[in-house]
Every structure is written in C-alpha cells, then in structure tokens.
Image (cartoon, rainbow, N blue to C red):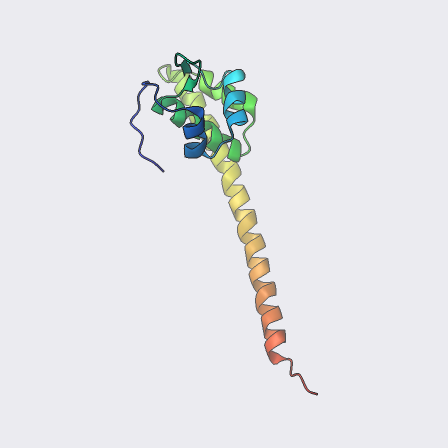
Length: 134
C-alpha cells in the first residue's frame, strides 16, 4: 500500500485515483454521487481533485465492499461520529461483525482448498502409477 499522508490538500485527478485504488472512474463518481465520498474539490476546468484523506476513504469503502458489506451499512458506518463514544462503540461492533464474516469465509476457503489438494494428490498418484504399454 502506498504511503499517504492524511490531509485534505486536493492534488490527485480521478485518473490518478483510479490507478492508485484500482477502482474504475465510474465507481469513484458513483461513490461521490451517493454521498460516500464528499468534499471533492474542482480545479478551474471543473476537474475533480482528490486528497489523501479521500483516497483513504475510498480504500476503506473498497475494503468494506470486498467483505460483502452493503452500501447502506457503509454509509451508516461513515455517518457514525469518530468522537462520540456510542458512535465509536457501534463502529467497533460493525468491524467485529465483518471480521466474523471474513473468518467464516476464510474457514470455508481453507476447507475447499484442502479438498482440492486431496483431489490433486489423488489424481497425481493415479497418473504416476498408471503404466502406459503399447
């Protein structure tokens, strides 16, 4: 992950943000349109300019989406205050819930990989033991 300094100085174009985050430009604009990404600056030519803070917000959204979290829950998470003790508690709870979901997925993937490894080994043994005669 690139090193970003948290800050609100707008300096990245949408093309640069797309390359940094590996998100498509339409996805980035969509997140702005639905309010998950706010305060996007514009230059004199009306080109969007993004800050390090906004790139980190996009990375957070991207991570949460990859865990299967829905847009509404991400919006709720973002809307919770970092300063309010109850908001922090709820944010923590949301993160713990997503962690549980990911751990369950990880366990399932590990079971599937073990099955595939077993099949691969069995097939390799059968292949190696099979003598071809003419």
